[in-house]
Length: 144
Image (cartoon, rainbow, N blue to C red; front, side):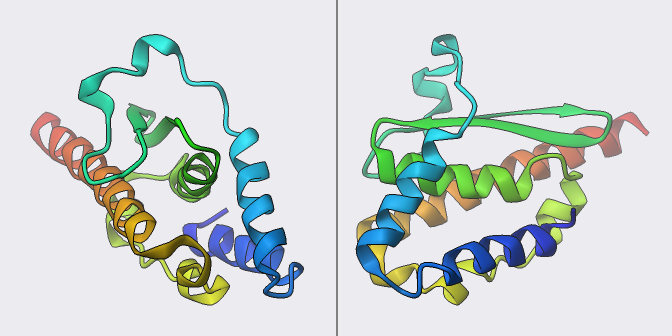
């Protein structure tokens, strides 16, 4: 699936909640529980996303020109938020990630239920994922 198809799928899932704040927050936490387990050895200071109020660990690897992210957080809501990003960006090329326009947040009205601090943290997660993509793209350019 493309990045936009994945975003549309998420928008569709959230539309079923009909804007119910409590159900939306619960759903985000539920989504986070489905995030694959991150090895404890990856939960290091180097892998912490700077700018998040909660602790968020993020790693990335490039395989067959696709990026695969692993992530975790020490809070349920933040883990759910990072899991949405992992779902959208996983298994895509650095170019696809760098050229993507994330619009699902506005469509699901995320600002209504995550607040300013988490919005800043969410932006930091996106920035970190795009920085990984840029680093991998640069590596690819150097090799070719």
